[in-house]
Length: 404
Image (cartoon, rainbow, N blue to C red; front, side, top):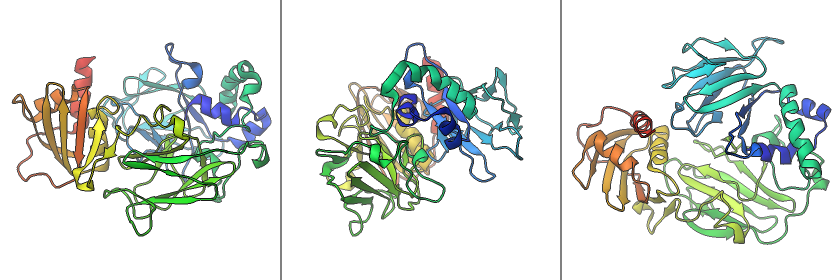
């Protein structure tokens, strides 16, 4: 989530309440001089039993960083082995390494994390590791600058993972449910494959692959029969995952199985689909859902998913294919170049362009197409010996480094 969203939700807590609520550390993105201070991403570092918190680009990571130079599973943040012991970090053998306070980590060797440590994942993604007390100190000047506007209770903002308790029960926003403003007016459930559905107060909508069980039907092997469910209540929109095989993703993590209050306009991702609940007038310009051209299914589902390359670059589509180990075909139509890429189990098989380029050279040429459309077909590609030796991630990385 963004720092602004965190402040809207929890900025009204006193220091004592904040420290009682948040016993875990945080990762806060290093400030970008060209961006707003409150627009910095922040992640809550939550332990999962004795296992580490996985950081990476992959959809199944606990902390997902959308950076092509970050590996799919880049590093682990390891919880304290005993009371009073420090958190640790270990690189998973990432392509572009993990750097701790300016020192490159040896893959597989855990290193202690101190409060305020600087961590760089890959070449560009820099974060500061904060224990809860020091993170509260970072927030203090922002809260003072915001003044009364920092009070969180009268907003429709709640971050998914922070809104459910360990028992699975829904946890209200700070200040209690009575402090929330009612959510009045028309609200629609948007999916970039079909027309929006109205959400009335008290109404539930199941999203999934089965027409028998779901009101909003999505095609694809990555979608479960009953994948997730939305409910509109008088005080906001709630969602929960229904035990899907591949998960529902939002706010930098996975949507839990307990009811979770979500932001109007905030995108939830199911496979290649993007869903959001929002007001009608903001559906085309909210910034969360760039419009029906982003990923929409035209006609029969067999025709595939159409994406606008100006909204979603081919590099992101290929990374999704690799992460979810899809099989099929991608067709790219640009202003002066056309081409296609075949893949099986997330690995490239062959590629060709309209100007005669083949294999890896064709993939790299298509990666440079920024205006046009892309058709993703989840079908069995033609048989034959693979003509590309490297993965999509390796090709994308080399192209990125060469262009920069």
